[in-house]
Length: 116
Image (cartoon, rainbow, N blue to C red):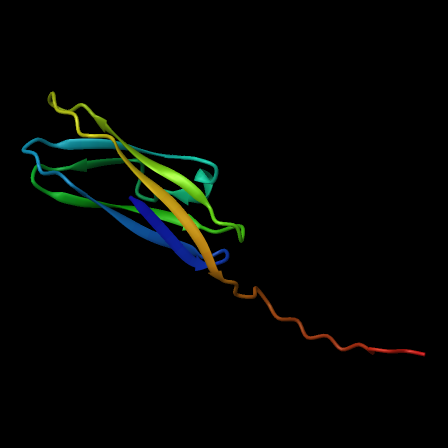
């Protein structure tokens, strides 16, 4: 799956990844961000998540744009063995797009356009 982050330049966009556990055992995952622009993405609630049996939880992923070019990374969720059960390794493609630029400040200047 691909998660798209769309916003203004230098803005922080937060997306949630919903994780479901259909099994009768607790699942634990370690999250890792990898790729060219992985440093622009973050996991504000930490990089480990526990999902109770027959429940679901969500994980926040934040992105702060620094450049106009699209950013790309991959979110990997690697299962930790709990009570003899392993979950599947999950991967999500993270992509960004800067839709608009908001000025940091506006300066007004007066000067002559032409001098002899």
